[in-house]
Length: 188
Image (tube, rainbow, N blue to C red; front, side, top):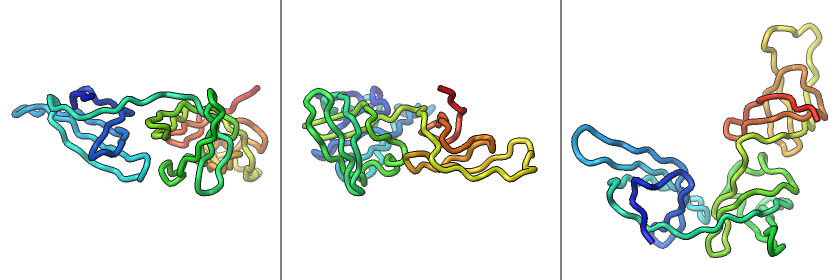
């Protein structure tokens, strides 16, 4: 199958040089003179290789048929994420090197939507806002009442987040997973 370059979106899976790639950034450029083109940043989920491609918007590239399936994250062993297919209960080992930093965002036992191709996980979709439990919190310094005073906390996944000084250990906070910034305290 082929797709016009102008139709490629973030998350589109493409086959380039017989390797699967996921579009991680897309910029459509329409210069005053000449034909429009698309600037793409592509990442190989199997090797971690990053490609930058510039393609005329009317040119075609080969896309691949992928499936979106639910996988439960069970644990990581330092080298692989172990994910269980929610339909078949099959365990799949996904190289952590292909998803750098995800170990701080993914929670044990949570289900994630995954893009798969040929029984291989190409992409793990982490929600843009996730609730974490504060595992460690620095104590607020008495008298530190400066407006907007903050401190660092560590979540149950190991993610360090700057939060307001009133956040305590054991509390739940909502975090933007793209910027890794505190959004709000969550009351059950």
